[in-house]
Image (cartoon, rainbow, N blue to C red):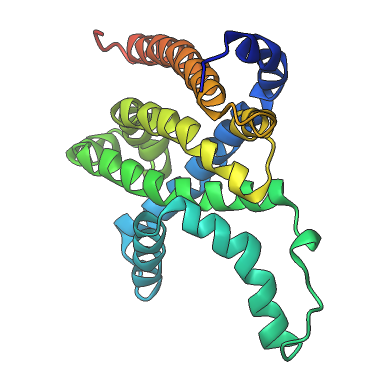
Length: 235
């Protein structure tokens, strides 16, 4: 089958229009996941009984199961399981009763939080805690020591890996089309079904992912340099 550049030009406006959805599916999980991950990381460091084991199970589960399986089980499996457990097998809840976008955001956020938890935990653990003793010796409280000394240093340590994970999340959003979320991939795939122009569609989406990733990486590097400069660390 011949390769049609005209298909790419004709489809480009529709795919570009779907970029905001792809960016939203990237930004929401990594931001909310960072908030969840921060508190989970503190629990992992404090190691409270039972909760420590539960957080470990949570992290292991979401880090072990492929994202596409989590999406499928959440979107298609939960209604069926609910019908079986709650309604005795009667088809009361249907897939159409669930918002594909809501499912995608929840799954991506939980998935991201599991990875970011370990990322933040590692960053916090890398900071020399002897600084806490020095801070206490000059009259700082434990809370102030964390907020003004430990956490800022941990942020600098975590930023490169956090930004790398954000770029990975950008690519991972391409699987949400499997539950009918209209991101860039879903838009291109839908257009490709008319005439089976899937190669052209995937080339187009691939180029756009490269461009977005390149721009995002440049922004991340600038943010990282500014953060290090504000902390008095040479880039």
